Length: 458
Ligand SMILES: O=C(O)[C@H]1O[C@H](OP(=O)(O)OP(=O)(O)OC[C@H]2O[C@@H](n3ccc(=O)[nH]c3=O)[C@H](O)[C@@H]2O)[C@H](O)[C@@H](O)[C@@H]1O
Image (cartoon, rainbow, N blue to C red; front, side, top):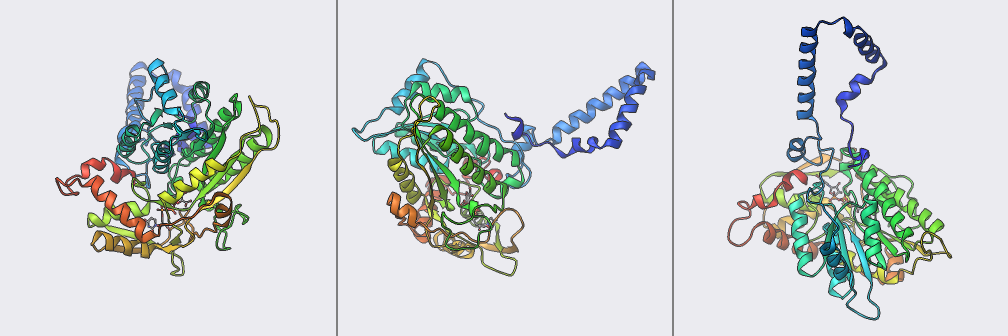
């Protein structure tokens, strides 16, 4: 775990003031006057305080599993069984990377492959005969059992998933030694806009350090792959020009999440400029669908409506509507694959640039923003249940009032054509949700255990 992932708890900060430092310092100097029994008593109290601190520390695993990602949790656990290497493992990697369609097949390293978009994209690539190796650290930002279920899905279709971290340079160089990847689809990230106020370090570690780690490995590879990676619609931040176009300002992010994605776009520029890496950034607009992320509103609204719990709907300061350009997963996958297919080759080799390389950024949205209240109304219709609404002013938590994509560029360059509206897409999501959490043998409410800690992690 990197030090950046470990947010410093507030308690030690209290000891950092100059005054208290001197106070403790003087005390320390007088310690040699203490008798042995006094020292023993003091040590006992110190140990007790340390123990109590450990118990309430957000880093203790019990605190992690009890708390909610949108409130208290500050450090994420990754898979404890993460292990890689050995002849068997290498065989799996090579076989999964093998291209099965000629002559145009590609071999792709998909990071975040147990994630929502990662699973769908990996499956789609595999289905058409491309080589795919997945990489994921299975952290517990949300219910890891959902990620395991996605892994099982991938495994069924023949995609091998490496358990490891994008910040593990050794692992990356091993993977690039084993396989000549033509492309990297880099989707591993710390997602979520509001959680950035809870665990800022995780955004730096995954979205900044992690991206650099991937680009370093790619630029050092003997045969440099082309990179396609997930940026975000949130980079438009406080931009008010609509619909959002790639030429609009993106220098006013409203959350650390947005800032970390914007930083990623600048970092991409550097690696393209210095090393000749071909890089395409995709600005996803609120992606939803089956196998989605439990930390997203449409997902936990569904869970809470079914459970009869109230849901909180944000509204703008002057009662203004909050809206999102919700984009269905299949449309996003089509955009990802088209980006891979149209990516030109990187021009460098072993870290040396041979000529200018492609650098692109595309909006992948749906072009029709829908108010959050309408999202709830659609869910009510599909679930045949009424939501208990609690409308509150949008807290200053990094959210923006609306998003709306202009997708002309993606249409022209990628042939991107979203075809699923929110009504249809949510119908498919609800169908999946009810099947996944409520197998026919029993009520979904009885099966809540299957969602594990999802109520904590969403
Ligand atoms: O498009 C993007 O760039 C981003 O889309 C989503 O972020 P967001 O649009 O905030 O999606 P949700 O968290 O699902 O929120 C959807 C809408 O519901 C609203 N909301 C959320 C939570 C809540 O309790 N109540 C509520 O009204 C939000 O303000 C927002 O307008 C993803 O979570 C980000 O990872 C992604 O990068």
